[in-house]
Image 1 (spheres, rainbow, N blue to C red):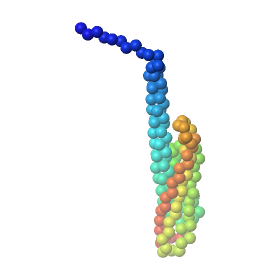
Image 2 (cartoon, rainbow, N blue to C red):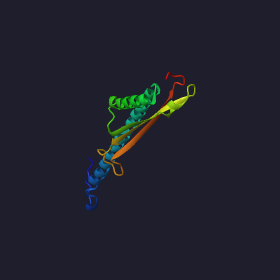
Image 3 (tube, rainbow, N blue to C red):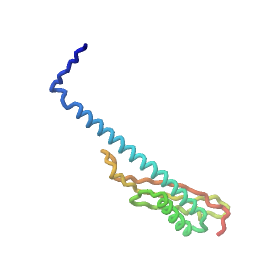
Image 4 (tube, rainbow, N blue to C red):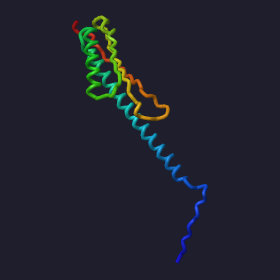
Length: 147
């Protein structure tokens, strides 16, 4: 039969497991927060680009610059609402200078959608409280459109 020997812990090693656990848990929480923030930014970027594409397309099928502005603004904001993008502020800017091109000349409209995403609930050192995400897309205007 074997005898089990117990090792006496010296006073210099006491509490080291607790310190290791605190460091490990902190690193795990920071990694989780980075994953959450990165996912939120990536999903929002995709939604912003989709909204910009829809706004540009809506503007390109309008007959005049005023109607293009109104249609693109309405469609871009509706797209953000439908995708439930958590923006603290948002804007849709449309470039309709392509409508000034003479008939038969290729032109395009461009829509830029901007969204400010709140990241204050993701507590990471060095992480800003909010992040501005912008997406720009263009769509061709029919060169032979009716005026």
